[in-house]
Amino acid sequence: MHPGHSSGMTPSIFSISYAGFWGQTTLGLCDFIQHAGKLGYPSVMIAGKRPHLSPLDATPELVKPVQDALAAAKVRCDVLGAYTNLSQPSVVGCEVPYIEMQIAYVESLARIAVQIGAKIVRIFTAYEIEGQDPQSQWKRCTTAIREMCDRAAAHGVTIAIQNHHDVGLHTEALIEMLADIDRPNCKLGFDAWSPALRGESLYEAAKMAAPHTVITTNADYIKVPRHRYRPELVNYERQSTDWVRAVPFGTGFIDYAAFFKGLRDGGFKGIATYEMCSPLRGGGSQENLDACAIGYLKWMRDHVFLAPAEHVQAQPL
Image 1: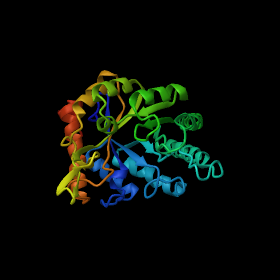
Image 2: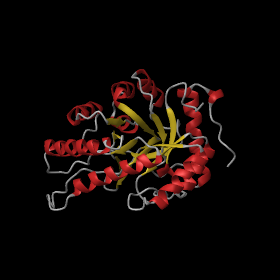
Image 3: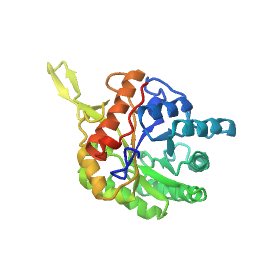
Image 4: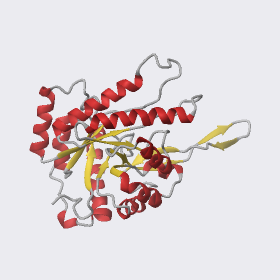
């Protein structure tokens, strides 16, 4: 019985955590899958880009070892992570088909997902572009995501919108966007990080989003105050935006107890994924990454899963 059984949630770890983008240890995809199993995770989320699973590289010769690695580690891949930004740069207008390229990219990941057993492709909306009216940007996103959903549906895949990018960011706006997209296979990848930074009530936001949510991706952070020295005043000027730094799960400012209570009270029974996707306190050594990954499972077992005896124990590394 996997450690998410009692809550209906399944713990997962995102391969981006070991992809090396922020100076951390890099593991190849098959090595990552094997490692996730040893850490005690029953599920993984795989990044749909290099160095892990780019559609450019996903030949049968690459996919077969991934299938074998999942089977050998007794780990499922439930989610592929697409990296999208559905903005249309003003400088080129409609000359370059950026949106079509991204629709094709997401459709490719949906085809790959079926081959490795995943049912969800996570996407982002768009960063706002200064000077473009919000309604046009909103319409561009909803139209593109609707087509992504239609193409993914042919493969039995759900599209999950993660609440990180500017368009449709607030929880109420995200729910409004789902209604405009109006596709049964369009759901949410709803995280605590963004609403916590923007001051939303984590319990209320999570409860509102929960009926539409299939995945939540979790990481914890601290806020580091910033000041700038003003020599003419012989004093410091407080900067309005803090530096945000990743820390081991449960040690930051995000009230994950309230967040998961909101998800649970709203009926969420999906994938709860841990990610290390920025420079992390303690550095990028494998020892630190592993300690944080194991710490997430322990925190979730103690605060969410509430089933210590059923927890899949990490194997010796």
